Amino acid sequence: MEECEICGKYTKTIKCNINSGVVNLCQNCAKMGEEIKQPKKIIQNNLDEENELFDLDTEEELADDWNKIIQKKRDALGLTIKQLAEKLNIRESVMKKIESRNFTLDDLTKSKIEKFFKIKLTKKKANFAINKMMVLLLAMITLAIIVILIIFFFDTGKDMVKDNIFSFISNIFSFISTIEE
Image (tube, rainbow, N blue to C red; front, side, top):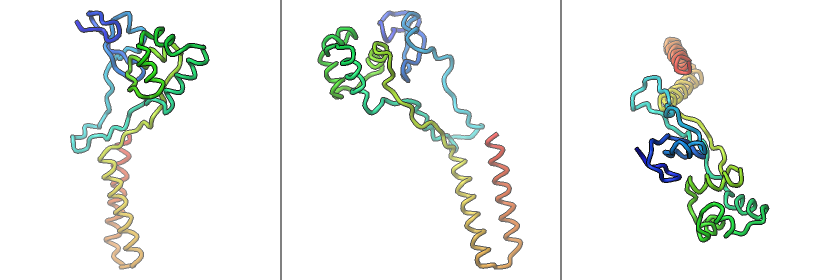
């Protein structure tokens, strides 16, 4: 048994995603978020730790003007800071700090605000991952191309070296195509 992170009830909890934050919620509060069925996994093609992924997958972040969005929505409804704070069950001083951006907006408070105004205070971030092995392969390809250019530029006439380099590059491209599958 764990404590629900919204209502505080001690019960069996469910891991849920609420606005890109993972929280443990009771059955009732879980309706506010999206249940997490299984943890996110990145397939690494059985690579060892040396070739781990640089995971730059952060999906969402607070919008740059999140405090202005809140203020405009509050003004549009004709609410004072005190009235909004009461409706969200937040102290008035905290609400003032939120609107002046002197408060770090936690997931629970952000969720309350988003639900009340029916808005999103987040924006999408870049979403990609780079494999160390791929970086190494790209460096090797670049080096091979430089060597080819030097050989052709100086025209040394060493056909065997040229053939070996072409074979090497062909093998690299074959290896990359198997990784991408």
